[in-house]
Image (cartoon, rainbow, N blue to C red):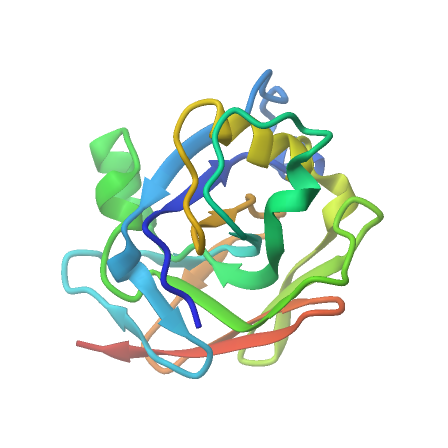
Length: 204
């Protein structure tokens, strides 16, 4: 179902998250990458690595690219989106702080759950509710209309940096309320019109 050559992720892309962190809104999208080996599907387990003591969830909207693209405008970006999915940008927060950059903390196997399906008929710009729950308790609640850079702007911006291939995934940033996971937790990312991505945290 998901076979990306790369996963491009966006940092700090919700106005309410920037307000929560008391930081300025970025002038352009802040991008980083996760390897394809981070991908797991709905119902599969997030493995808690022994290298971290602070595992966090980050519920996000994912964009799935339809075909090979380079240097497209934001006005034509919609033509090249196969659909949208739920994503969880699982993060080893302590390693992120230690390293001062994000590669190690974001790149462990199982750190990018995607699913439960790809949907093409929803409109993130008009607004989709996004909710993250841990063990049934709501931890994140926002709406995609609160994004700083919308889905078309992101696809265009990234395509001017790198060629996007069919199946590549862009995860579009997380709303406020990120927090910890422990072994045995069940984390759900629900996006209006798409469904619920559900994964359990297990020990290695």
